[in-house]
Structures are given as structure tokens and as C-alpha cells.
Image (cartoon, rainbow, N blue to C red; front, side):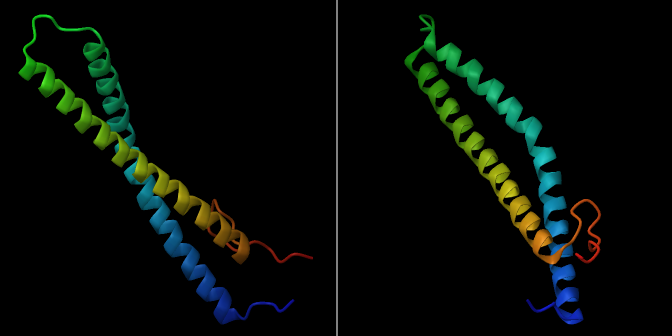
Length: 115
């Protein structure tokens, strides 16, 4: 097995640092979106329950509007879930890169050489 050159190590460290920055950005986005996702889930459940119980007083237009709103919430919900999935994928990619480059995940510092 050939040991990486110092240039290669530097390149891997820079790559890992860029991945750390991307993950940090995704984590901030995840923290920002999590409350929105919870609110959307609550809203969707409320609307679902309202649609299950027939509203005898509501007009056809009201029911159509409610269904449209439910579909909009479902689309937003799917978008938020996709963003969360992307963050998870990037975290796994970073973990693999750090392991290959022997970089400590918590600090971004190189791990001591294996003996």
C-alpha cells in the first residue's frame, strides 16, 4: 500500500474542509426547515381530518379549495423531505471521505497515523 503524498493529503484535507462547510450549510438549512416541516405535517393532518368528516355546510367550491390546499401542503412536504434526504446523503459522503483521509469528524483534524 502506497502512502499518500503531502500534496495528496493537503488536497484531501481541503476537500474534507469543503465538505464540512457544505454539511454545516445543510445543517443550518435543516434546522431552518424542521419547524416548517412540523408545521406542515400538523396542517396536513388537520386538513386530512377535516376532509374525512363531511362538511355539510361547505360548498363544492370550499371543498375544492380545501383539496387544493391539501395537495399544496403535500407538495411542500415532499420538497422539505427531499432537502432533508440531500443533507443525509452529504453527511454520509463526508463520513466516507473523512474515513478515507483519516480525518476526525468532530474537529476536522487529521487522525494520528496507524501503527
